[in-house]
Image (cartoon, helix red, strand yellow):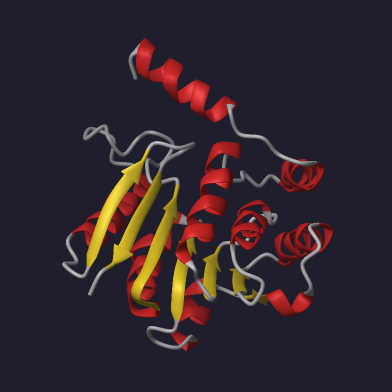
Length: 211
């Protein structure tokens, strides 16, 4: 990243603002060793949710509720968020963030379990948005399930699409990097989707289902 590009990226990241609810969630994340989406990416999730008119959303990887809260803040009052995480402490932290933001329990469903076991039980083409922020080892499987779950007009969002800025370096063949590249390739090669990579935070892949 050259100096001008880095300066612009840093400027954009610095414009993001967060309230005490998100700040407390991030503090819980530090205590649990959870890396949440960047402030700029959190703001972007809210904007994308607000413009999507989504009614049913799936989040793969709850973290500590930063991304889920950001999505809920942009979604309509009648939207339901299903968030999935294998770690019950992460789910408890996410619930706390949701409640602190004023969201009633009817607005979200928190499922404890392995995403690769939970996702196949969800209904085909029943969701307007799928947000992926989970372990890289199963990233291609999550992307495959997301393709099945999202309806026409919906979108798939994948956080850390740069795998900590390693994806763009062909010589790097770490398992997480290869898995991320494979998931991106899977979505970009599917003719039903239009995709783009946004250099916010650690990278956000946006794939809109057009057919």
